[in-house]
Image 1 (cartoon, rainbow, N blue to C red):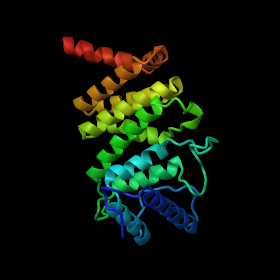
Image 2 (image 1 turned 90 degrees about the vertical axis):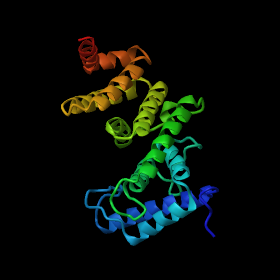
Image 3 (image 1 turned 60 degrees about the vertical axis):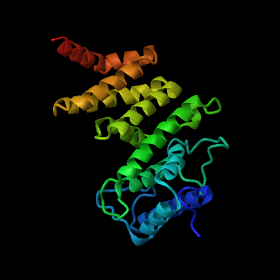
Image 4 (image 1 turned 90 degrees about the horizontal axis):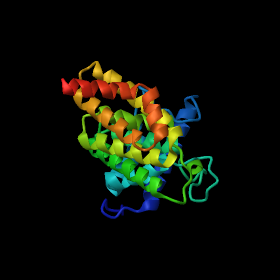
Length: 247
């Protein structure tokens, strides 16, 4: 009998993650593609993946599922830390990202349409994971991985339509930067600037304000972050906003 969403079994859920990862990898290898799972524009859910997703839907709430996946998103697969294992019995950061993306992208009907329930759950889980990682004294930067694909996806939420999702993304970026410092801010701030510039051309005032707010929060974390904001042109863009408001 399947566990109810109110009391999901962690081992069962993580077992389903492994089943999905292994099946997707085998499917891709049979097609003669890369050893790394890639969800392309032509990707279609097969019956086995749909069955695993149905089981997840019935065995666990979206929030619990995403909470389990979120911490794995930031697991350094090459780390020797016993608290962050990397083996055939655990999924990598990339695997977690693929599974999370599938759950967010497909509704319960398995049509290619965003699932708001899973999107909001994912944003909350990522924010919580970031805060947890940032406050952990037992985790060093060598234990933590924030891949380009995960980082860009988080930053892209600043341009999204959901207010809570964008707010969660901003808080996650600040939390990770507090933990990882300049190496991460050097990746985050220029990307935010790119999104900011793109949205300026569309007159997307809400996104511009979100980007400006995120830049200010990150710049306040230290001199190195402020220098990055200056060199990337973010401070010039903030100045333009201030001058415009004064006028």
